[in-house]
Image (cartoon, rainbow, N blue to C red):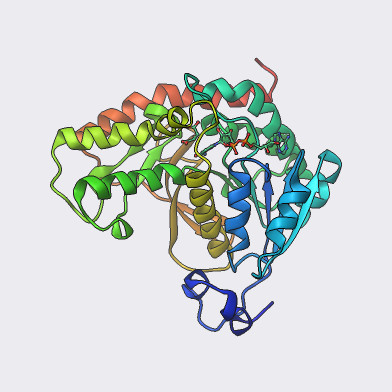
Length: 340
Ligand code: NAD
Ligand code: LMR
């Protein structure tokens, strides 16, 4: 434990928010896929997070360079790089939070589901190692298709006897980040004040932003809400097309991943009222996994919050997304159980 005073010089407002003069516990965060497009800026942002005491950077190649580079930054955490499967155990041991941005990204013309064949196997292997080396860690799944990779992780953990639904999260924060940005632009309100829940899943029409609940309130026309909804749903594709074959969102994703991991750490540390949207095991709808607002706590998910009042347009969107989301969930489950 290091006291807040020791850390003050190198800290940001992140550290001071939610803490009095209490000690900040040691926390190990592992990033799997740390040398990738998301992994590198995410490693940087986690190095800047004063809640992290140990930062473990794992990839199948190139992590020694990334770790050496990031390790020179004069902030709290100690950084170690691990490369290759034989070092995965050491990378994971003792982790409180494991963030997974490992796997291939989309190219123009592809759907997230087109990544399934490669990424399902990568995620399965990494989750088998998590079950073995840090079964109590909170897992932040970024690898696509999130609608299937989260169910894959759940099945792997069930098989290993380590599954705890409170500790598995699909990271949908980028949808929230986009919805906030696009809403602020259209509603002409300060972006820093905006809140918009985004529910459902993380692909196309399964992404359902609830602009009827957006704050600060603005009187947007139905067509404007529909355009904002479509832009949020197609936000990933907008970046994939702009990058023209050089991958998908990495910088905005690293930002979103860092926000979500920070929320997990705050929850673990007992900060009250930490709420973020995430794709988790859920009874909010009849689907076994669903993204909605989640209260984070010392054990991970403290409470999965309901949807709140929906507009007719949102109710329609919710019914429309269910078949696609369910099919993606079932595909993940079947893959893990070797049925496909
Ligand atoms: P990238 O190709 O730049 O990086 C991926 C990294 O994963 C590479 O460094 C690669 O070596 C590593 N990797 C591959 N197999 C591995 C394994 N078995 N163990 C550890 N590392 C492994 O891709 P990227 O742009 O960083 O995207 C990564 C993933 O994140 C993609 O699947 C992408 O679709 C997804 N993504 C999700 C969101 C979201 O909102 N959830 C947003 C953006 C991207
Ligand atoms: C995103 O939303 O940016 C990611 O899921 C990457 C993608 O393929 O769109």
